[in-house]
Length: 363
Image (cartoon, rainbow, N blue to C red; front, side, top):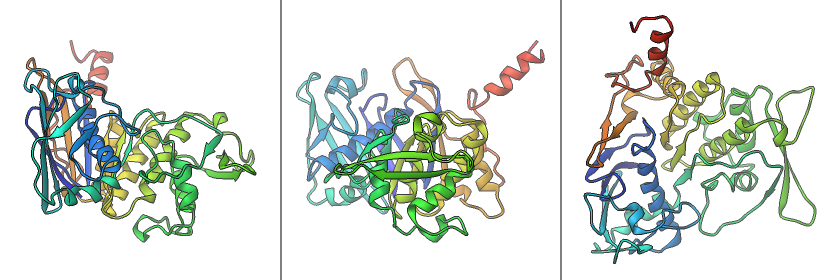
């Protein structure tokens, strides 16, 4: 598990430490730093997969494209270097990187501690980063076999490949829905039926190719139909379930906007599913604008069955950027009864604000 991330000189971060938990929720205003934290971890993931060590940072690759040094260096607090420190369980990895100039496309390590890369390489090579820009409904999927990457892909482009390759994989008991075979595809269908009643999927090989034709069913009477005839919600959600249920204990999964294209009820159920996954030993770092995702997590904490404990969750609320380009970050906690220890201004309070206007309470 990634226990902490310390970022310096990277984008809006000057000297910020984030103590992470099995389930970390990032929320807040647009362009306030949430995505930058995920990008820092995705950058280390990309570097780990592309290189044998961390002697340089791979800014542009198949996972993430960050541009030049100038695009990632803090605009006012850093000149030519970035600093990363990551806690992995009881060990710590840290490194300084410098660019020759702000037009450079690479950062090179200033110093190196012998053997320390072994701490971070296995964790970040197995990390999954699923961006908000996921693939929409698509009928034909290529079964790609990547030597470097074993995840569903930043856009979910390898999700079906991952599913087919691990179709008969056994799922840990704590993640299984009872009454359903403990196999990856069966459990994906069962979990997704909580959001899409009657959901089933079918993938048929196209003879003589490495492609499959994908179809979905959400109604027993209608049967299987093309993905583009169902809508974006299902296609955007499927890679999340594949990534989470295919992960192994100790793996890390980063997810941007799991609520995308989902009904509010489904968003709440997604929050409960993410809590269940995190409680099983798979670390989740989730960026969300949804109060329903938050409330699904809060309900899980409060539940008598306690899918996740309060102490295994943490929230970072990015309230904005100061004039000196430094983020304002709060960390309201979730109590055992599901309540929040504090409720900063602008933290999922827009509903109350709008209602106050509608009933004239703000006069």
